[in-house]
Length: 468
Image (cartoon, rainbow, N blue to C red; front, side, top):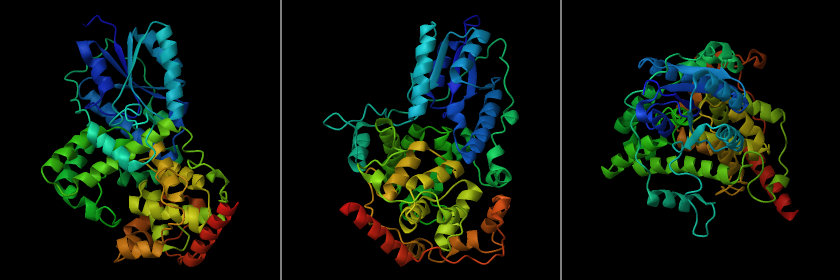
């Protein structure tokens, strides 16, 4: 097959070799493979922290490919134009990629597929990002699920395909096409001086993902159900960024934890449910493509949320005067992560105590999260705000003080991020923009709103909305 025209493997959010159906298909028959990543407008639309994390992931994938003589070709520009150029340069006759499901990504992929097939190219998209394709899981009436619990049951009942191994060989083309420089893309520009702080907390690449899963199975899974709600504990899997960029396949995680479930691991089913919650978000985004722009519940776009405001800016900077909220917002800015329990608390505080539109919070999370996933971000914000699918009722308002007493009872998490001299507080001050003028020893701000006052104001707004 040395004289055969090469196949193109277009990497996107699947920066791995194992359990990558698109790569496996490209490698079939032993033809040469050109591995490509395209920085197009759809990809550049990611927030600052996610772009930084993408750069880290691309460097790790390229290093992994180079161990087998391969390399990752980087090109910037319109995806169709870049692919046409690479095809002309290499004589490639086939193109493979893994499917993505946001509206912008699907529109791009339809355009590319139609154009290149019309020009005689063999183009194939592949499953592999999700446990099941969105059109494969339907209610008895033939529509999409709108409630999580029956969706979970449907996924568990249908089963999940086993993961694939990595290709045994990735033959190289006679000549590699020219590649852009990753450094020249400046994917770290948006995080400015915060990049060095983000790097301290980052786990990057397929090997790191496999190691983290193994560590979680060995040390964390058995206590997952009881430890996952406590932000000061290492009680979660730590796989979210790896899953977001496809450095580990969701099917790999599913089957590894499923084996543990069959062996009696206590936390296995709760973790599988969290994987399916991620899946549920992707399915909803596919069937309801404006999930990140419009309230999912009819009529809720008319709710009297405030637009962006000074209180929301205090929230972004971790200066609301509410200790658990401020600690969580500092964790987000310094590390690009936020523990799931406090994600719900800060989202509730913004949308209810501060009566601020959920889309303001969604945009900030999109800019700051290294594990950003558009579908999960949109569903999470709408769920907490009370306007989304399977939603917490609007009148269920998280009280940050009560949540802190229950899930940070000794104050360790809050001290870590708020007290001068603590590593978390120092990391935040090192990462924060200079125009915020944060000072490690500055006194804590007064609360922007009392908790009882904020709750009463939110319920009054709800009552008025319902009357209207």
